[in-house]
Amino acid sequence: MSKNILAIETSCDETACALYNARCGIIAERVYSQWKTHAPYGGVVPEMASRDHLQKLLRLIDSLPLTAHPPDAIAYTAGPGLASALLTGATTAQALGMGWGCQVIPVNHLEGHLLSPLLQSPPPSLPYIALLVSGGHTQLYQVIAPNTYALLGETLDDAAGEAFDKSAVLLGLDYPGGKKLEVLAKSGAPTAIRFAPPAQGKFNFSFSGIKTAVRRAVQTNANKADIAASFQQAVADGLAQQVKNALQHSGYKTFCLVGGVAQNQFIAQQLTTLTTAMGVRFVSPHPRHCGDNAAMIAVVAAHKPGQQHSGGFDVFPRWQVATTP
Ligand code: KG4
Ligand code: ZN
Image 1 (cartoon, rainbow, N blue to C red):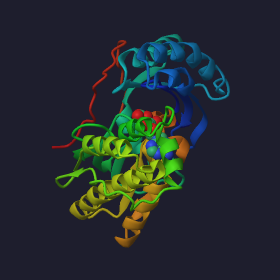
Image 2: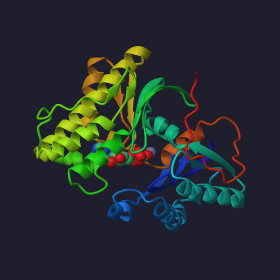
Image 3: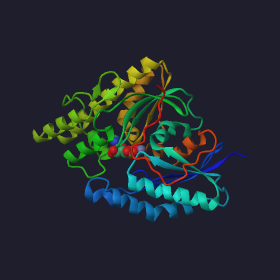
Image 4: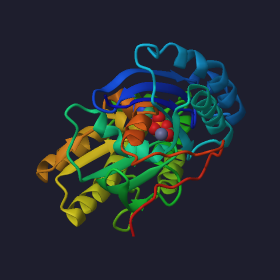
């Protein structure tokens, strides 16, 4: 019988848990988004996030079919993320692991996003190029195998999701603004304003310039839907440019778009067009697995060799994915 894994994710503003079987896949999963808690403040308030995790996490875990599928291992996000939020998941995982006598596996959140395409049935074959676009990260990887990654490039300043959220605020949209900006862009012209695509060098990104350009466009009273559509077009162009370079560099025939911004249908469509023209398969996880979730944490744990014990309540708020030289 293959291993049942209980996975816990509390790195930011989603409280999530999942029960996963290494052979059969997801048995059950829960995600509680805290956006209502943070909305009045226009961004995530770390102490409120950890309080919300504390109130919700055990109840969510309790609602999983644990009796029918007793966990053999508990995986939790140990970083990167907000220290106080990570601690709630870490302490819960360690306490349950001690009580149930099962192994506890610390997992890197970014690795979770990188392997999230493996939640699909059938999963894409490795290796693949993964573009991770979220609220905290924008990175381009060669995913060679589980546990073997090469970082090709990343953002030099803001993350793509952060650029969406900050531009949304400038356009007068409520937090969280990424999705709302995409909706506003539907009624605008993507060619109305020429924003420079946020690409740097061959594989890197920079989003601080486009954010300033959006501010200037707002100050000149340009049409807000046009600003949104032009911003989104420039972001899509910048991402596509570096994805093309990464695919040419690696020769890989599969591309995966992962992280919260992967839910943006315009960007997904533009990258589908690019990859199709290059004879490359485009893969994006189910929208539920693009944003933060615990099933992706379980997948990473299922691929970890041997017994792992974090042996303490350590969390690593700036933990980077271990990459090959
Ligand atoms: O991966 P995720 O759920 O959390 C992090 O680890 O950051 O990503 C959240 C980010 C936010 O910045 C949010 O605005 C952005 O993903 N996002 C979107 C869309 N849906 C979520 N950005 C653009 N268009 C969307 N439809
Ligand atoms: Zn994330």
